[in-house]
Length: 212
Image 1 (cartoon, rainbow, N blue to C red):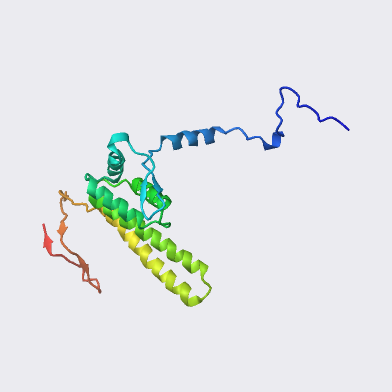
Image 2 (image 1 turned 180 degrees about the horizontal axis):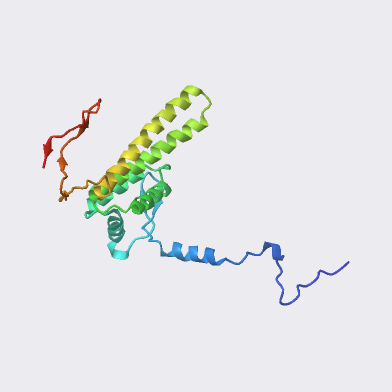
């Protein structure tokens, strides 16, 4: 009976094909970027209908966690922060700590600057989750009637989401801008027309409300 061969010193026992490949420069850069992302307090399931923070800060309990989340939400009150957490817990695609943690990350990514923006962002998350849920139901169904009903609901929610995005942009001063002309230069022999101008058919020219 042949004796099993001993591994040669300096060579791995694991076949080279199963060894992890070295990280590329791009992968290392991505890993460094991920490590720089802000980390937020996480929740865990408690075995009941409630969730709890995975870590607490000694004698201060959950206070530091609430403060960290309040800063991420743009909210300056404990009660407001707790209300937003409760809203996010009921809007997850999964009604557990995992769904809540995902929603917290999304809300922090929207980066609300005050309570109004935070509440609008919560609505945006709920609208998005509901829309994708109705789309999922439409895909899973086979009857045309059920598909149409779910798609129609999803489309309405998507339109609402778009309106919410526009509302957030307006709150941040990124909505439609109005350009006001303060000075008008008129060269010799010309006229400046101020007001609404209507072009009439038949070459009658333009009607101006006020000329200067």
